[in-house]
Length: 452
Image (tube, rainbow, N blue to C red; front, side):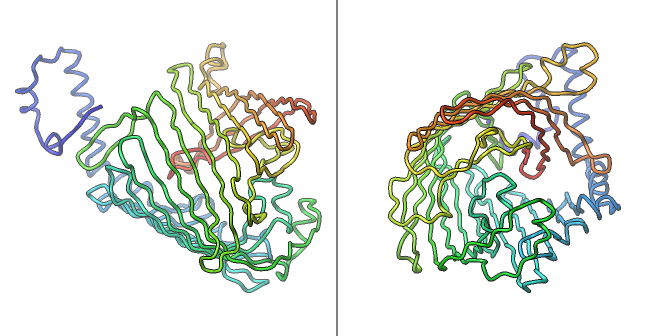
């Protein structure tokens, strides 16, 4: 859409007056002066120092609840430390754990960056150390060139997408130690290739010492952990994304993507590689789909995803690698772009399935037309989804609508949460779900610029 050279930022107003073919009108001149003055203030060392002092100021809300940030705009780096209340995990598998985590982020003058994260914990009952350490490095800002390495040892979920009442069961836990390496690069404009290699050592936690406190608090059935023979697993996953006519701005040191009016098409191949490092798995999973976000101006925006997938090879497919369709929670409304809200059970799919999810955010375009309601800052959402799983003879569809409100924490203006109330209805050829009322609570991830 445009190309800007570094020299453009170094020219003064006299140069632009000389090269401008048509003089600015009085209104344009006023707008230019206003924008230039705002830009000068926002880029001034005085203002940036003030922002750093506000972020770095140590306060009790940050120390106890929100976590502390130490930012240095001159060196373009920041440290992120957890709050005191996050140092102890009273409810976790195997009992209470002491947790230490933090992050370091650095952006260099050539717009490359480096992210380091560590999240470690110590369990008192089993005297074990779990956690992960990761490094992510962007080395080519013009082609999305980046690589990452992550290693760790953690208790993972066999059914990671199940409803929370099932996720917390001991029978859903296993011990995973592993090493992940990933790389991403844009082959040409709009076409991006991602590759990830994972080495994993799967172990049972049947010999872990556990407490029944969580069972009594949450009313979870006291089921023992699954006891299975330890095995190793090696994975290779390749993803290819293509967005036709992807628009971008070319800055002196980086490429800024502006989106496209066409959807993004993608293909995923996940391979369980046998033999290497005594890997005991052997399967191939393929997935194809498209995703898109359409901006409708004042009418809001629509996001949708359509995909299909299947296992083409299941010579040695472990339960941990199954593809599960997640059931809906009884009360909680979860991410509607990935999860069905009223599905009655969690089940695996092996043969080809078809799935679609849609979400439209009106951004207040309807409620704001109603007298007095505009002052409440409410936002309307609606959407739905469908699932076709021939192997289970299942045809399922759902619709939902809701009202949301975004709140800012008074002690931390950078932290936001979204509270919503929703009505969900569904139809299926194998079961019946009545209309359900649900609530949703999500927080804003300011580092990834999205709702969690």
